[in-house]
Length: 289
Image 1: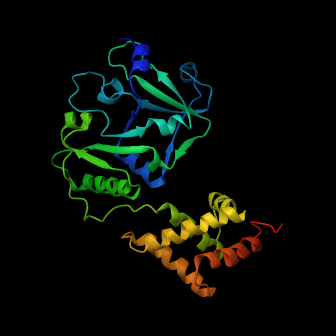
Image 2: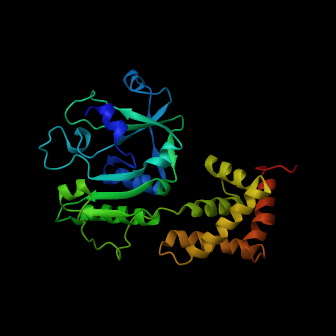
Image 3: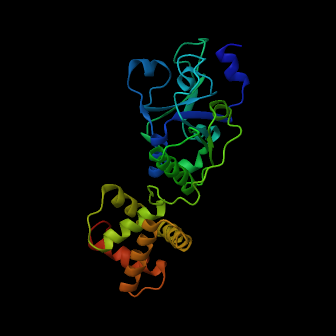
């Protein structure tokens, strides 16, 4: 069966992307996957004229994943994640690509996604599972990174599996138990809603806002219907966040509530609709119609 026949007959419910532990941590912390610039002639010739692309594997036996030789005992990458193909397909153009040439032994049977955007956000919506290969005797200096990865995945509600055998890692079978549940010494990323709390706190205290924070607040405060959705999200997030073990997140909630107390407000809705909106007008981030 040649590559084209394979593409036409095989289901693409799953595709994969391989990387290392540190890269995976950054993706989860930032809730963002950065795409590769599609600017070289070689890359352009492979498919599309859009400016960015994401490369995925249709199977886990190709050269890029396992190494140059099929006899490689240890994969080149120690992490791969499963992707919701339909989710990405509905948002990006995709097509099969043979980077090394059709029919070549060790082919990736690559599926490539193209976009004019430089990144894909909301990773919890399209990363279905994360698989991690670890050594049987993990050194403490390395274990802290695995604990970090474990908790970042938990905070994004993405299942994560660990393996100490390379064959099981590749097949996704027989994951091992890890003792990271009670280890809270990790690099805690702020939850998404905490970024909004931080922006509001900075706004109300007269601190400088980043360009991203300004655009976010403008977007959710400009129209009443967007503001209502924003208020609902913040209210529910604060209610759920009060039980979080993440100290940094809880501190933002505490600072937000202190601002409500300062302005003598007892509801998030009243505080945002009146005080936050007024402060945005005062700082000329919005203008009255």
